Image (cartoon, rainbow over all chains, first blue to last red; front, side):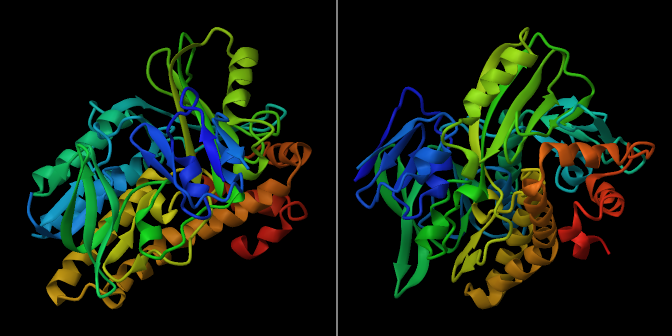
Length: 57
Length: 392
């Protein structure tokens, strides 16, 4: 379970990191990293201001 | 770089830099780290700030003031205008900042006060000894190293990890975040007032802003409540607004970001750890403003660092002074704003119009928002009944 981040869309603002309930995301300078604790809950995808995240089930 | 510091501050925004400066002025060994190569960039902010709040911390400098505004105008969904916060003698009106320059100036002040600064340096975890926090793991240029400290300050913004590592749950629910987009636009008339547009068509659960940023330019952006985002995106709403209402605008910059609007969270300290600014969710739930609160909290945290060093005790017993102090001041305001925000969320556009109409004939132009709200309540007790405890 993970999310895909479209790096060509992402504005690396970190909003998704702030809402992740399990702390699976991290903003590293200009990109988002997803670790293996992601539960595909989709909160990050919902709140992304530009719609750069897509949940993979 | 030393092996051990009194204080490591993670994040060189306004909260972090003021904490670092305050602690360094108190004679402490301070390290301020910033994960980005450039302090202040990329911006994730509408850059509006009150003069009064700012002057408590730094003398205004034309190098980082992009524009001075006369006051605020709130626009109801039907276009009814409410003028507020015009500068009387009290200096309530504000500035639009140039954050890229402002943040660097604050970090420079911390540096001049004696703090060490490291950029492109990211905290990747906390060091612990018998459960006690003893510093951080930090990555610089791809290499991880251990840096020890008695206190770690999490000033790492909306995406804060420091709190989570320290066992503090800072995760925001969708209804606790405004998801925002902003363009710096040119070829427009920015006007002399900061403008706030209310209404479902602009920004569901939030508002749209136009903040003058100098000749022919403005920050035009909006925040959409996270719980209302998904089918519609902040960026799409903003693009539509520009197309429909500002077709002449030329876009010079895009800014995106999330603003915590949760109100006070349960815990912002742990043994050897304090959170400040957006990391502590100290931004205002109603306005989204966070710079002044962040600086105020930074000052308090920095002072408590000095006290902790004097005592030689870095546990919550000593750090609680910070938690108590910010809750009694910033926290109180956050709770009030949260109540008003929650109320506004329930109102229809028609009710918002009614509220605006009820102020006809009343001169609010010199009043700040906290003075206008009780008047609104008196005029509209039915619509605003839930807020009665705040204003009676």
